[in-house]
Image 1 (cartoon, helix red, strand yellow):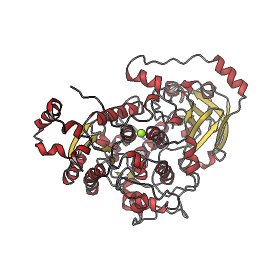
Image 2 (cartoon, protein in one colour; image 1 turned 180 degrees about the horizontal axis):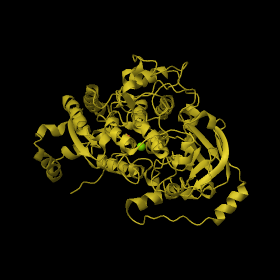
Image 3 (cartoon, helix red, strand yellow; image 1 turned 45 degrees about the vertical axis):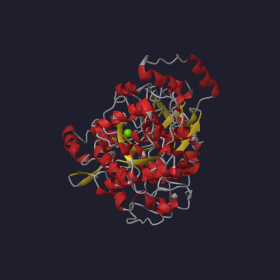
Image 4 (tube, protein in one colour; image 1 turned 90 degrees about the horizontal axis):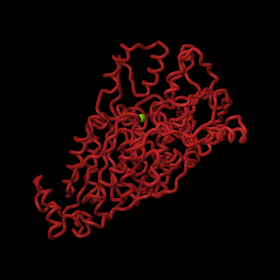
Length: 570
Ligand code: FES
Ligand code: MG
């Protein structure tokens, strides 16, 4: 490729004062003059010791650099804000859009020709893909990889056990000492959560979209093959720059449909919906909440991983990884969808093999015929809600019961175990103000722990409804992402304890037994919502965040602005 064709040449290829400034300060790192003629590859790094799942990313970046150098590129690593699920309050989801802005402006404002996105813990993947889409340079994703399966006293453990342990702690079968003894056994290697939680679902999503090299999703973080994949990705991005293979050449409607079909088959996270909708919004691809139901309803669960099944990401890798899953899905997928290696998705999985049918089943012999995700509508979710049937209880799929309403998370925590709370296993727990504007940031609190008195009776699941999200590692008959959320003043906002609700997953409905008139009357009497943030990013977020059915992106961030920057800095 001729130097003048590189985007970076409008920095490094310049003469006079501007070219001098653009090159001179870079040379303080000992960069020889000829490097500036090469394709400049940004390595967008979400490394942080506050994001333990991504704490090995400087090693990963080193492997990417080797690949870039080997292919004749000029690698430049840069940090962006990182989001660690386990530490960050009140929820990383509040900051996904902020990171996407950081990524977008960092890419556009700098002399980059292509970019490698290093993604791991849940939100780091959608945030980086969203930001990169709004610039639309050649880009490739390298995921950090899952942890090795946890081992405690000879038994495998993973993140989904956290929810079982929380219930055990509440009900008295687990004590604090036992919990402590498991801490070091759960997360026993570098990497992200080892179940099919959100991080793994996102790693599968990028592979199914065609944004990573084949096999990216499942290789454990500490497996040498992960570094090999990183190095090969570094080499490939240099080629992609030469071919001018941009994100928009890959992210067509077909790719999104492939990702939705894949997410259903793997029992992927409900968070996948929100993130894919937001990515589609950035990429300018028409995608609606109901598409997730339509496209996934005939797809059975063929991957036997927790929380919908039994095993872990490490097992999926040994069984053949995502390519083997995609091959089994061959008859459902758009086979001609382009991927980052310049081949179609079907060319990529053509030679894949399944090595363990207990982990990767077949369409004819799936682990569960329940589809991955169902989209509900009704008079308390006018713009939709979602449930993950594969992680729910069959006996609650059609259920009518009285609501026990909590106005917010503080109200839930205060009253859930109070003696006076009238609740039994037929009740439906309702949590309001866990939505994008209401919390704010739409946290993963939707899988509320059941009341202690019911846990002690041996009840393990109840219908729970909220405008929040649930961890991708969570499970239960949990209706999530109610839109409009309570804080946006839809019918959900005026539900009261004692209202009778009916969940009917086969019919895809969620209804309150209340007339339209009664709901309207209650809304007239409802006090206007108070929002607490008056300054800073949180205030901006509350003003501009869209509802869950649109992907909870900020309204002014949808679409993209391309990669052109007309003005110089001096
Ligand atoms: Fe990072 Fe689960 S906490 S992926
Ligand atoms: Mg999470």
